Length: 307
Image 1 (cartoon, rainbow, N blue to C red):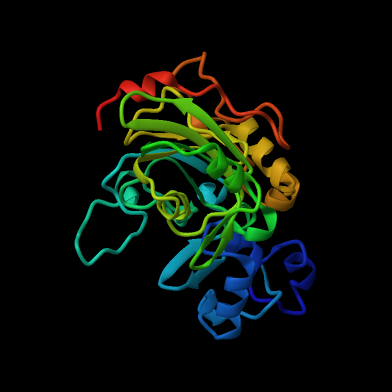
Image 2 (cartoon, rainbow, N blue to C red):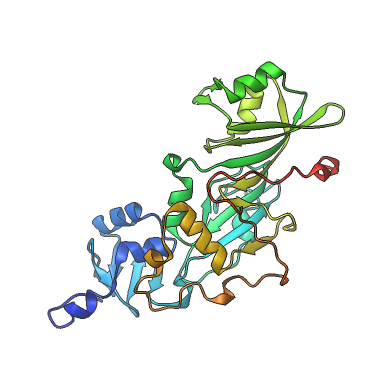
């Protein structure tokens, strides 16, 4: 709604447009603010301005997408996906390869944003959200969110190499990388399993680190991102949506209050239908400790799965 003298008091009760678009998954607040400054956002066919407030019923247009303020799908949603090998984390691919976005639930007035990436031949946990603010908190390097992987390599690390990875680090072409945790999970024959954890997400960083030590990664699987574990029962190619309590835990963990994201919105925050579990005994994928809890035991059955 565009502010006038008559309705200024009512508009003041609305929400700032950059916050509404960020929560709807259009992008981070900084990105949305840049669009507004460039004249690429309108409200009810009128160019938007920084700080403009919108209320239920207003129609926002930005980057060829529209959003009707107050629609039920404005709520924050978080989706887990067990990515198989052979899929890209992109909506556009000149080679027409399968995309992870092909299997995600359809949204109205919102957009799934991938939190981090996995390369074409890497499987495991991918997280999607409709909140640009949440995505930014989880991906920005300054937050140092932990990423944990199960790695199968051809060969075996020496004691000296393990000490180096955990100590001074390994020098790569784009800088040094140091692992925060590395455990030997054993193996049979030429293949050997490790579980590693680091706090950055540079492109192919795990594969490149082992390659720098003369070892080829034959299988790589992300099993945890921050406080979110890959659910053991979530099969490859399947999705699972977090429920109300789980989303609240994630928001609290990254330092965003639920009130901050839902304040003054006309829709009910986090309706119970946001994530109906498959059974009443569904185990939460969130770690119990929110700071630096220990990882779950390594799944030794993984070694017996054929690639």
